[in-house]
Length: 332
Image 1: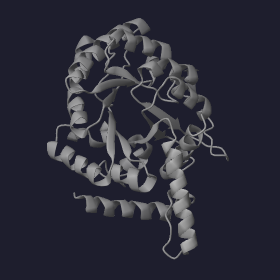
Image 2: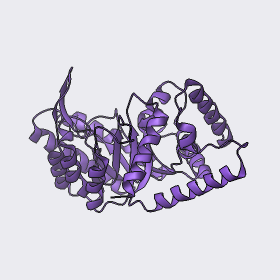
Image 3: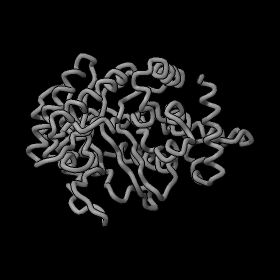
Image 4: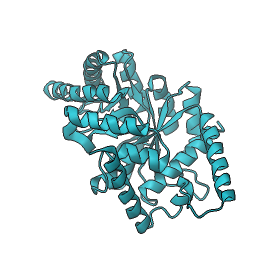
């Protein structure tokens, strides 16, 4: 599929969203201006765009978009993984993307597909940051055979990340057994995968992603014990539930402490968002407090938007998160 065909698909996607009413505020936010507006209005729009660009340049971090933010549209087949980079750039003004492997699960070793994806990104001025890998096994599995399989399952994603120009793959360090047993297994699994990835100049990074991996102290100790420069973390603002039941989370780690503990090893940061108040602030995470933690750690890389809310459409949630990051990021 050529780039112009991708753009046509994106236009169809936009029409669907507008008809559904999912972007009641999106036209203003996304800066889509009608041709019938006066020259004065166009001048004002240009000034606003210039001001936004100046504000973005003052941020201590760069903004990327995590593909999971659009998982509903992807699962509904309203778009594909090939559409994602174009949407990030054209619909949200974001020129860096973070993939999720399940949306191109059978393409990791498809050279033609990866080349096509690279062409789309190059044609649209989009850079590839990382690939989030799920469904390939847990690197902290206490069963040695399963852990070995998990390590080897990730080899193809290391190679795909290299082909796409990403700097990292995100993996899972969960497992079964005591905390100590899972830690021992994770140190082994992460160490062996990082050794493989080192030759490709790819980082292996672990997100606080449920179970014991959401314990910031536990995970930071594991990464420290691996002791490899290309083995790090992807601190997520919201994934700190260690244990849950049908009623919800029953054991949640302090998110601010957790991020602080993970930041010394961070190769990326995930800005999780769900719900917003009337002022545009995320109601579950104090972004001012959290971004101060990130900044004080000396981090200057990408912060990826990962919207998972239900009250707003995916597109609106992404834009609200971006606006919040830009607002707070320019002040901290």
